[in-house]
Length: 515
Image (cartoon, rainbow, N blue to C red; front, side, top):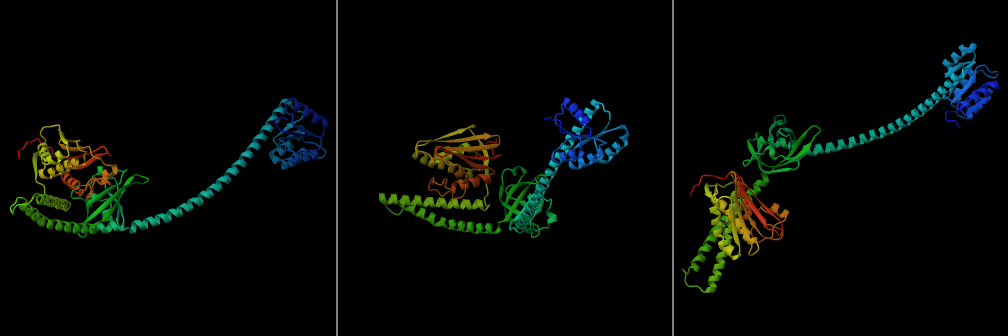
């Protein structure tokens, strides 16, 4: 079958239809149907699809214009050519305008022109069919798009309702939250507050917007700075006070800061909690502990003094067994007195009633003195203590007695928790104006989890008890070092020992002073 299209020829003269069919066959148009009666041609067009209809104008049964008009009704996309004589030229032009025939060709025709017109007519039909198909596809696509658009609108409407409900709930939570909620930018400028925050500050909202949050929330120890903000981690602040200008008071608060992102830039959310009630309870508890421990000192000292009278035989001779018993009683009382004194020191630091007597002293010499004081304990454990330093003398400006307490505690812990016969290394380094002091042991070590809570009050190192200690020594050491604006930390692994380090910032002094 010819791929160029199906052609229907209608002419009342058989010679004309045969001639045309033969001509088209020679030009490669193989799918041709010829009719000498227009009625037969119309019946054929009702059953078969055609691409081009060629019709004579003058036919006895029906003229060509009427025939082509009826053919167009049957097949709307078909192209048509009208064969006419010179005298019927006006009618042919009318047919072009009224029924939309593709072209009229006057008899006698030129074969080349006729073939070219036929090819153009077939191309027109092909394009019209393709256009119709594309229009159909476009209509189907538009229908699908309308359906998707409708579904999308319904989904958006549903999500909008859900978001509106969630937003209303969130606003209600923020508005009625008991804690103050403040948003601020990277310059600490307040951008919004909830009702609880306004009540805490005791000011109107318009007076607080654009104020510096950390001029209203302050710490006596350390002012919060931009470098302390980190978008990857939350920040938790203790021991801060909020200034309430309405009542001219400071309210103790705890602040939790988290980062967030908006469409435009980054900002922070601060949750401010009033801890006045908790602080008062802590004060009452600490006062009770301080009073209790203070009152225990007198009977303990009296007990130790009484035992000393017995041991020095001021009250008469005692047997060897009695002496051993009294020595054990004295040791127990001294341990109890040490615990009482430690509790009093802890209370003193937590209550902010610590007063340092800073002097310039050689910490190398002080460390050797601490080692001498613990020599009996070190010898009993069969250990050696090695001291490494990058200067023979390192003078620091600090409270000598308090630093002595820290060094003694670190060395004592290292001796207690190291394996018998192992060495302990003490290292002192001067880093510009900073002192770095470390004590390394070969003990049982600590897990990462235990390292994080080692310096807390009453912590004994691990979940598996490291010793029967009170857990106050390292806590007190941390209080002392932090009060000197330093820091203390530990590096440790299970079964690989521990390294305790404290740093004293800006404490090195080149001036050698003998005290």
